[in-house]
Length: 35
Image 1 (cartoon, rainbow, N blue to C red):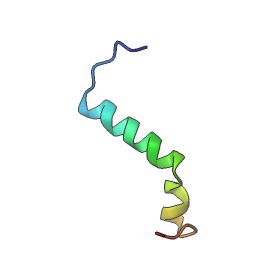
Image 2: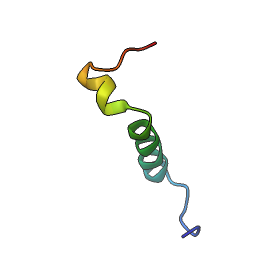
Image 3: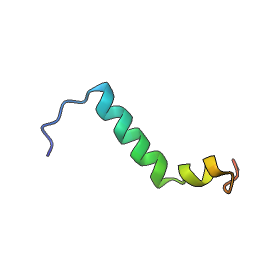
Image 4: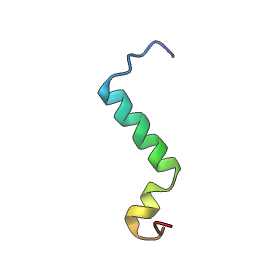
């Protein structure tokens, strides 16, 4: 909503959402290379 505090927990949740959007699950599963 824009009124949330930028807490460490919120930072972690945002970072994980970005990782998932960039293929984190496929990388961890080994189906996505590092390059």
